[in-house]
Length: 212
Image 1 (tube, rainbow, N blue to C red):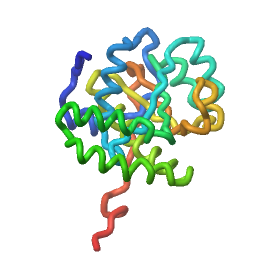
Image 2 (image 1 turned 120 degrees about the vertical axis):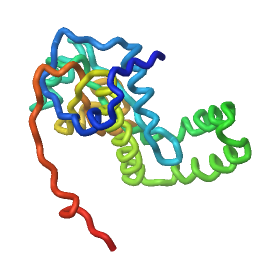
Image 3 (image 1 turned 180 degrees about the vertical axis):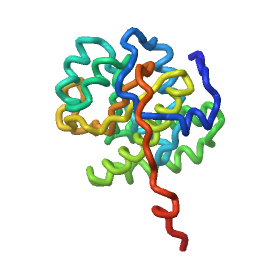
Image 4 (image 1 turned 90 degrees about the vertical axis):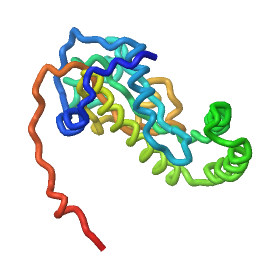
């Protein structure tokens, strides 16, 4: 995949980010570039590198109509964005553990004995966890990838809006996923901004931090 970064200014990418709700409806994002951004976003860390994040890119008018009643007060993003990226956590992510670790071995990034030892202990441990415990793991990991996707999008010249207000009970099933396996974490609208976005404030670090 070709990297198409147009902004490599860390300060602008990070501190200039705003949640954009209205987008230029004429702008589309190619599948090649969308996949490149997702690939770059998934360099984010995850527990034991099991990478539980899964993405559904909703871009067609027909599929956006299916999504519209589920995003409640976020219809503007759905209507105007180039795409709505649905971020799910896979509760059975350990099923790809062997694949991930085999690639690491083939690329010389993990010794075979380490691969064997870790899989022998980690996979059974993941399988023994409760749904609630796995839910916490995949939501944390997928949130890291989602945040990185928003920053990567800015590096590619796009803007985003993280959306938590949606019908989580129906999202997976509506788009053909097993709702008992795939946990909705976030929806991210992406496109070219058609507005400046709102200014916002943050609490001082002293207010939210304790040193012990």
